[in-house]
Length: 122
Figure 1 (cartoon, rainbow, N blue to C red):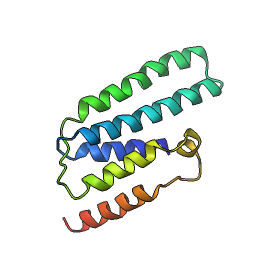
Figure 2: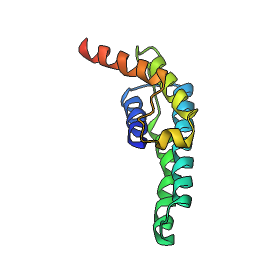
Figure 3: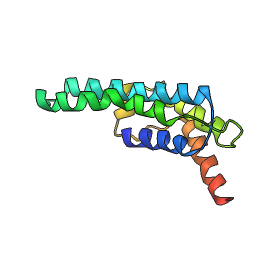
Figure 4: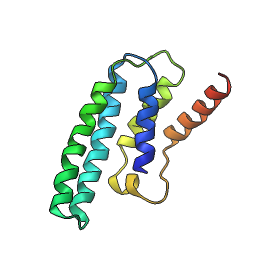
C-alpha cells in the first residue's frame, strides 16, 4: 500500500504547476506515511543500526516532496480528483495504509477512473 501512496504522490508531481492546496495535501500524506513507517520501525525487530539508517531517509522524504512540488496546474482536469485522493489517503489510519487489503478510498477510485479516461483521450 505504501508503494501506491508513493505512486499517487509521484503522479501528482508529474503534473507541471502551482498550488498551495496540492502542496499541503501531498505534505500531509507524506507526513502520514512517514509516521506510519516510523511506527512500524518501532514495532518490528529491526536492529538499532537498521533504524539508524532508515530514520534520516524517512525524515528527509517529506522535505524532498516539498522541494519537488513547485507548481501544480489548478485548472488541469485531474487536479481536483488528485487533491481529493491525497486528502482522503492522509485521513486513513496506519493500519489501513499498511494493510494487505488494498485499501482504496472512494476519492482515489474516482481519481483512478478519471486519470484512465484522461489518458485514453490523449
